[in-house]
Length: 469
Image (cartoon, rainbow, N blue to C red; front, top):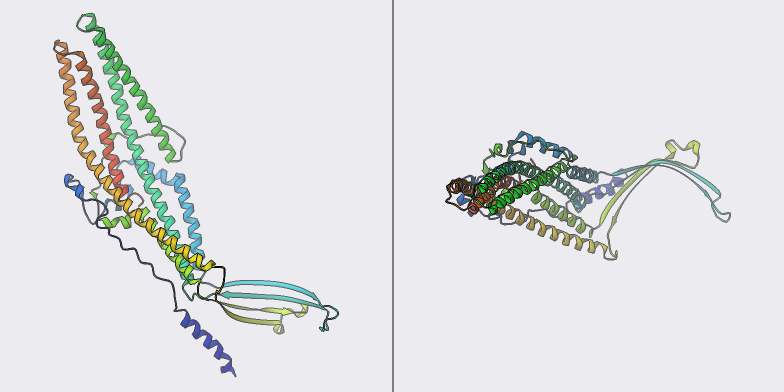
């Protein structure tokens, strides 16, 4: 009799083992995309400082990439206090909670119960006892085996959603670091330009006194005096504009650090240098280094697993329940051997007609998966475009510095020559004014070119996926 009693349980166990291998969930595979030509390498011909290598500059930590200690301190402050970073971290915490929930889905549910009921039967009832009390104390368990891989897919979807928030946080870090470095360099550049404007004001004020003296001696007219005076005012307006720009940059810089606006201590632009070798890496490295690309792929994985879940809803689900405890109509005999009860049940539920909800959910999941795939492809193309633009901008800035330096040298020489010719009466004063104005603009442009070179390096570093390590 005992063997016969165990036969149904043995058959039920064998059925579960055979059914549990019938996963309908598919395994995710990264979409096959051509990554060999994501960004243009033909732009490397004119620059010996950029090399293709198996190692990318993006793999260098930002602590080692930047050499300015003040800048590195500001970056750390920004990472510790920036509000966008804090929001991203809270998103990670929320996603981590769902991951824990996904892991717990494999476990059975367990509930305890303490019940009391009182039933009064009607007088016409055949039950002799009219008032019936029932006291219960028990434990109930429920378990759903992962027959079709639904729980497994849900777990993977939660993990992908978590990793998506991690990469979103990395992307925020990368953007923040690039923004802090860019503003820091802009502040140093505007310091240089303010110094140039102040020196120009002193020079033009001196020139104004000289032209007044030359006018009194009859060598120049009042027109030359007024033109010199106008150039002095122009330099003063330039100084006001630069000081305004300096204040705006400082305020924006403090906002990135989540601090009230204040003066920002910084070093000199001339002291800035990039010591990290500018290695581009291979084009496929964008898949591993760019946080936005990695984030887009985890969005795709999440949508893929949610599609698996939606598909598994077409198949029957099995639920096993069991309970045990004490039950008695007499509270004095509530707990005891005679009051013990136990039950076990299993059931399969197969959807038949449910107003098309399961099919609609599956179709929507497939559509969202297709959207995620298109977005992943788009982000990858954008990443390649970013690198191409940053690469070309870098080489342009490198070449611009050399050209503008030669232009400035030529214009400074022209100023010296024109002053000597003017003193000897061999030049028109308008030529002197033109040469001075051109030299001033060339000097300001030279500062902008040096700034552009530093910003181009930062942009290339970010475009390749650097900054979050």
